[in-house]
Every structure is written in C-alpha cells, then in structure tokens.
Image (cartoon, rainbow, N blue to C red):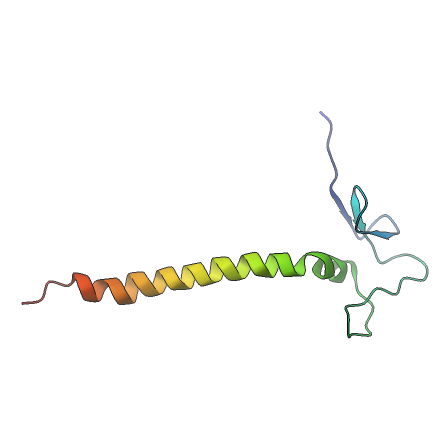
Length: 86
C-alpha cells in the first residue's frame, strides 16, 4: 500500500506552501518568515498558523456559534414555550 504525503511540518529544510507535499519548515539558512506586521520569525507551528489559521478559526467559530445557538435555543427559548402552565 502506498501513502500520499500532503504536508510535511518541521522537516524538509524548506518553506514551500505551494508544493506537493506542502513543506512548512523554518530550519533553512536565511529563513525570514513572519506574520504581516510582526518581526518575530515563525516556528513551524507559526507557518501552519500563517497558512491555515484563518480556515481553522473560521470552521471553529462556525461550530462554536452553532453550538452556542443550539444551547440557547434548547435550554432558554424552547422550554418557555413547552411548559405546561395552568
């Protein structure tokens, strides 16, 4: 069975976001990767965040907001309409 590698993080000695596999490593000579507006060089985790952070946060926020809305509706709005009051 053959494996397909889509991402390589913290190994490979290069920063190649567009390549196949996508290689996100900060261990190369002359690496100067930063987030826009910041001076601190990124770690490999920082490179992952730079390239995928918006997508991850976007999905997380959708899940979180959906769960919060569901919780609010279920435990706040619906019981007031379903109570058996005289």
